[in-house]
Image (cartoon, rainbow, N blue to C red; front, side, top):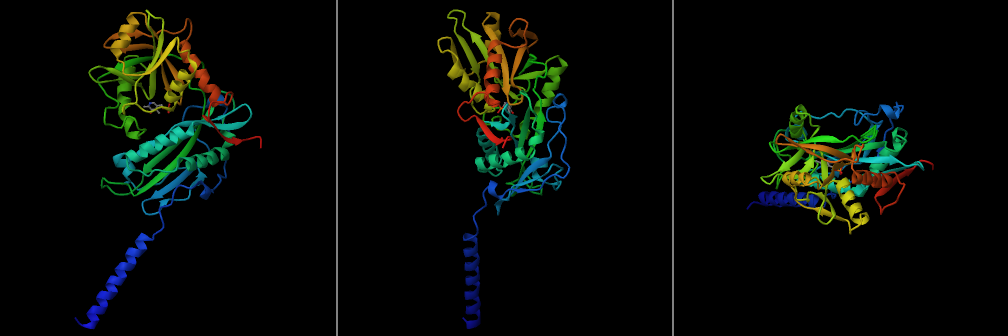
Length: 403
Ligand SMILES: *Cc1c(COP(=O)(O)O)cnc(C)c1O
């Protein structure tokens, strides 16, 4: 071998060794880090709307939190910027293959002018599970909560005062990679927008009529019904319109031959039965088998009910139960009440369920739009959310506005 060739081979292998070394010594992927937060203030702050003009999710605050992610760099510095449109390539994977997930939680102003969020760690945990399922990047929950706290503080003048009012927080994560290949997104954007909202029921509870739906299925075993993916929601509007055309506000989603009750609209659902023979009551909701969204409100209701209802009088169950059981127990006079549960309304009382052309009547307290436990649960949770009562670490103080 001539020395020239030999030399160039040596050089080549040295060069490739060098690149390999560079790759292994490359900086580790950056993690989401709240201490890197950069803030650009909106020069045109809004004046708050009067509380009675707040419509759910229709107006937003002055700022947006944005955090970019890239496969080779990891999480970029979090940025708070003036609220405004996002510009993306029309081929971005979010638009074609639904690389999108979201969360919903609320910040409350308590009577001491402290701002609080209800169990944000549960939402962050769920957001990470949703992200993992559609190969979007996961992140450190605590760090995102810190960034969200800053976003709330900067828009604190838009967090409504008065019990029942709150700031709805909408964390969102999308895949932004341009190109039509179906694959793992190499770029993503996590953003959080916030919307001042009023009580779901501005004039007190309003019990709803449901249509038990078996011709369309919301979620199925092995599917993604337990994740807050945008793709789960669009297909549920048409069945809702069909139910509405027959006079029902929401779908009571059934599953399988047994016609198990799963959820109502975009809420979890609870029923109360009373065993006529023993006088014992049972609070029932469907088990978390992968087809049920793991609601933070659901979890909170179960925990408080187990801690606070007298076990001599009550059992609290996560079990399968069908529309046939509800029908049968209603006929025997054993159906006591029923309600949906979720962040937006906390609880939503149910007064009637249409099933195969018949209506099942769900009792309400005389002259009221709710049942006794529905009202009790709403009160328990509101007291913790508004800091009137401390329960574990469920109410997370974001800021003290007196300071
Ligand atoms: C968000 C949601 C719920 C309620 O979850 P919370 O954490 O209590 O707000 C229930 N079911 C579905 C399908 C949902 O999307």
